[in-house]
Amino acid sequence: MQVNLLDFWPRILEATQETLLMVSIALVLATVIGLPLGVALVVTRDHGLMENKIVFNVLNGVVNIFRSIPFIILLVAILPLTRLLVGTSIGTAAATVPLVLFSGPYIARLIESSLLDVNKGVIEAAQSMGATNWQIIYRVLLPEALSTIALNLTIASIGLVGASAMAGFVGGGGLGDLAISYGYQRFETDIMIVTVILLIIIVQAFQAIGNYLSKKLRRL
Amino acid sequence: MINFKNVSKVYEHEGEKLVAVNEVNLQVERGEIFGVIGFSGAGKSTLVRLVNQLEKPTEGEVLVDGQDVSSLSAKELRGMRRKISMIFQHFNLLESKTVYHNVAFPLILSGEPRDKVKKRVEKILDFVGLKDRANYYTDQLSGGQKQRVGIARALATSPDILLCDEATSALDPETTQSILELLRKIRDEYNVTILMITHEMNVVKDVCDRVAVMEDGEVIEQGSIFDLFTNPKHKTTHKFIQSVMKGDIPQSILIGIGENNHPRHIYRVTFLKEHAGEPVFSRIAKRFNVEVNILYGQILEIQETPFGNLIVELQGEDSEILKAVHYIEEVVSVERVMASAS
Image (cartoon, rainbow over all chains, first blue to last red; front, side, top):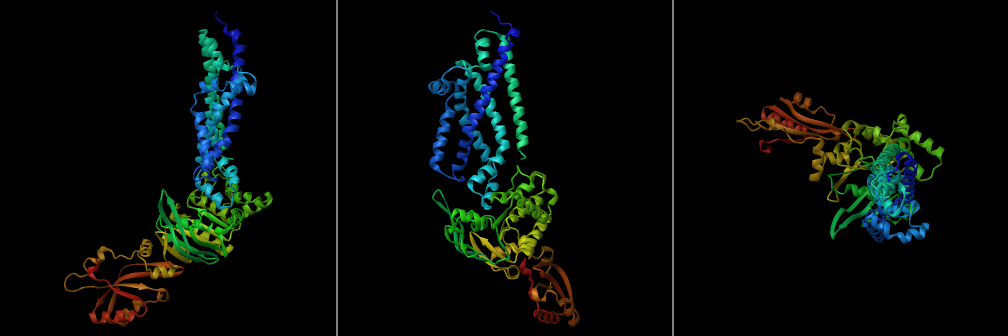
């Protein structure tokens, strides 16, 4: 039975909201995990501010392990954890858990590379002025890297849009879910096209916001 | 003020030892501008970083105001670093912050109250001539202006010592001069002791009181800038001097010195400090029957004293020339230039 696209709009709108909500919550939580992790990776590495081989190797290993698990596998593998945390394994809230675990370590890497780009000479200059390591982190490393971090978080958020669509496979809600259950499984081509267009608009909007923020943050 | 006592710094990389600084002994006096010159890889960058402990010595001690800096606790060291400022070849400014904020940075680090910071920053920016650039970002400044910001930042904490790490090496000659003038002004007005490292003899010549020459981690020669220029002992020192003062005689002059049976009398005359102002040539021209023809030469001003050498040809009877040479030898150094010199 064909679905009337006009009648279907409320459902599409709802799905769009779900996607945006999923992505933003996951982005915030993943950044909360990824930012300190990325900073730790930078400062504990060889010749870092607080060089510590053991801490670095452990963190580096953990991040690599999470980064090597395909999202679709992670999604299923952590179902028990998801159930424990949000009480259910289906729906938008449930999809957020694997999204955070998936993108947290990814964001850690992005933060790491942003911070490594900061001119070593500026760090040395701060040291020569008697800055403490913490002062260097929050007064030199983070402000100097902020513009790059904004761009990298844009990459992460677009990655999250893609991953959130995959979450549709386990009934995660959002535009991906819609595309799969109507467009794919029920051959509703026009719904498929609408969802894809909406996803394109979301990605374009994210990139535009990211570029704007990055430019603003270049000068604090 | 700064005292290096038998200081060595050895890096170990995958079992291989690299001696960056080798048993250096140096004494920098309060209020002087001391230069360390050397080619790249001579160890001067490491040397200057031993003073503020960005590098730790593997042997020996570095005393600042009589205090062994490597014995300080982390907290004491931070305090000490506020009194030892540093400027850099590539300026190392915060790109995300304005000129004002860059200069305020060391004061913010030590938690100074806002109004005090503002007063100090405005005063220092005025001193370095960047008052009207306070709200610019570093990418809107020229190289010379960036270094002025670096200098202002270094002065913000009213340091006793200023370390300059190739501070003019990224600048053009004219800008270099203006930065050197500023450094001199800092020494004169604030009595800041300046330790600068460079590979440019021009810089040393114009601003330093004393100089040490470094090669392969060792100080091979040191002394007042004038002594070094007039009486260099080491080959490397010689090379540096030649970079600003050509000691070679041009080929066009050498050709023909020994031609035919009338060898020409060509001499290299070197003027020294106390006689630099004396009119030796006009005197011998009047007193003896010789004519003086100046072929080539260069006079430099070192520490406000002229120094240099001239290549001259004396024409006339051999006996008269001999007498003339004897006469001027009492006040200047004279050396016959032979054909074989080519």
